[in-house]
Image 1 (cartoon, rainbow, N blue to C red):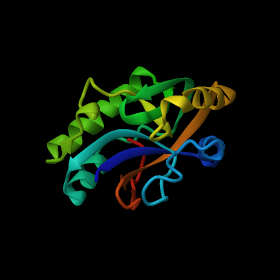
Image 2 (image 1 turned 180 degrees about the vertical axis):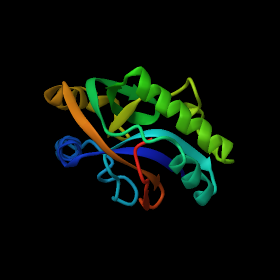
Image 3 (image 1 turned 90 degrees about the horizontal axis):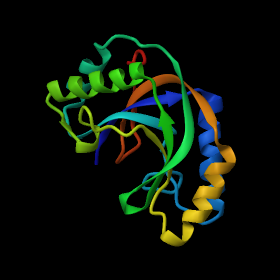
Amino acid sequence: MALAVCVLFDRAGDRAIRELWERLEAEGVPTLLSLTHGHHRAHLSYAVALEWDLSQVFDAVAALPDGGPFPLAFHGTLLFPRGRAALAASVTAEVAARQDRVARAIAAAGATLHHHYEPGQWVPHVSAATRVKGSQLATVARLVHDVLPLTVQVAGAALIDSGTGELWPLPHVP
């Protein structure tokens, strides 16, 4: 599948996203709770690699400076092709620069980046729903609207294998 460099939220932020997923699932809208292995975590991906060497990617990201925790605010909803809906994250120039550094570091480590995560192509988001049907869009919009605006605290970072859910915590937040 893919290896993502993700920032993770504190307990309250993780719970807020998971509660949204649960409300969507209760309405019949698929989310990361029911996708593939069922071990998905609420997260914001800085970069996604399609081909990689785990130790090289880990070392490259761990060598980046510690940017520390930061608040992440959501003010809207995004719709992506193939039925994906997400919370639109509002990021500062510093967070955008962090993403750029991470993407460049893992590419320099030999990883093949997904084109949506190449420098200058990133659309910061947190997944809300997967495989949304057109008839479900109003439900998604209503349920997401009910939780917005939302601010969560980024508290950690990890490499996550999207195919298995396996997670390798990073020593700091790049």
